[in-house]
Image (cartoon, rainbow, N blue to C red; front, side, top):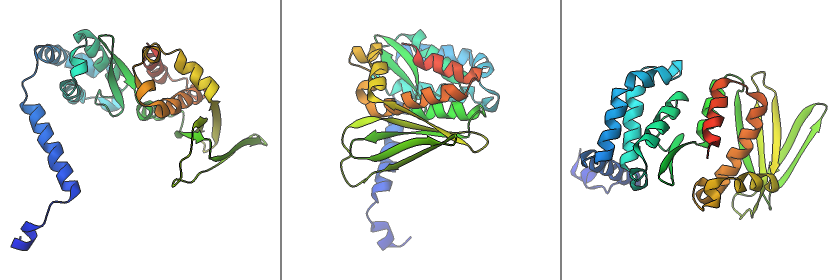
Amino acid sequence: MSTQQAAQPQTRYQQEVDKAAELLEKIIAAQPTIKAKSISRVLDTHVSRIEELLPDHMRGQAQRLVKRAMLTFSRSDKLEKCTENSFIRCVLEAAELGLAIDGRLCHAVPYKGQAQCQIDYKGLLEVAKRTGCIKNAWARLIHVSDKFSAWEEDGQCHYRHEFDITQPRGDVLGVYTVVKLPDGEWVGDWMGNAELDGIRNRSVAWRSNIGPWMTDDGEMRKKTGLKRALKTYIGDPGFTRALEIDDRE
């Protein structure tokens, strides 16, 4: 490498990579708390049982999921305040669904001293697609300024959705969900704010001013629409179990 090349300033991407690497090293170097050590010891002792919980395609991944869960735990002061058993339960429930507690597809959400397993929008879709009952699905928020229409004709669903990404779209009116079936057919489902707000208002966490309805309202509206649509087409026990875990307050 020439002197000129070596003197070139770091790109923003490289700076972010270095920053992430530095943070990871600090986390690894940090001494685990007594509670973290206790949780890790319990999970390591039961790796074989966690393997039994995993779906077939995830067999052999138990130790990796435990490490990712403990890394997540070490990053959160709020999780440190939760009971050990509640966090361990989150890890086991996520493993049962073939997911990891890593803040990407599945989360451990602190609530009144208890960690609760909560599946992300993308995690729910991952479990749903794995059943083979659907090919794909997605949900879209409909805003005041959007041009949106949906209709059924000759047994087929149709919709049109237009918006200008350079302009403010205004308040959310509802969510539209599309489910693509294995034979290529697709079906749509619509939920307005009256229905969405009714479901949100029944959430104990929301009434306590905490949880994802407070921090990620749009994502929760999409997830709510997706859940209702998928229930219609998926009766798989694995997906039903995912809904049971996610719906628990």
